[in-house]
Length: 250
Image (cartoon, rainbow, N blue to C red; front, top):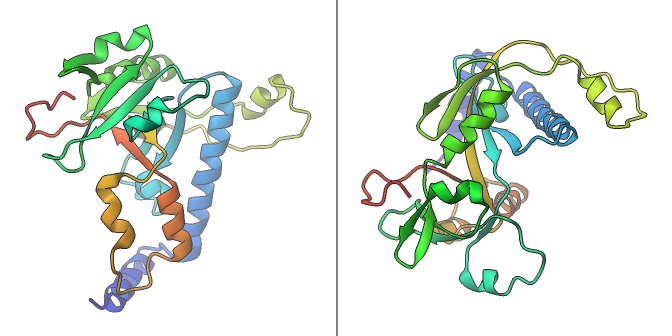
């Protein structure tokens, strides 16, 4: 397939909409730096979890008709193989799961919980010899966002939708943490409609997508650098069950 005509046509459409490559690159860097600053502020205030902007906003397209998509990364160790967990000798995290791919429903997995805190007991369900994590774990995340944001929070599938208000006085947070560096960060105090999705992060490339690594590509895309970054980025798990599965709650 010759992708050059399609690429040129897409570029023409984007240019007509005022979306040119230098602007897209600038927006991507702005979002990346914004995420870094926001997570620094969270660490100063000891607020978890880590958050990361994704979707069209992170891609630099800035589609004004679309909500901002944010993933909240729950602190958890995700094992892809049982022998990894058995051979792990270092100090273990407080929340551990073993990801079990659902062979009958590609793209979905059951999460067998090997260790968790008391706060997650209500979100476990027996499954064979294991206890698996329910999709309703996003309800637990809801309570955090109800406290953090003054607007009403609603649930849409795995996402929690609310309007966010950036902090007015960013410098004071750095100063209270002992920063001696003059920091001048301008954050406009505007409300932003956002969708938050609680996710677990796996560090390895998922076995279900192994074909993607060896796929024959006629075009020189993605570049080797981008390819390596994608493989090293691992994956994220969101609380969505297959509607075709009898175990859709897990």
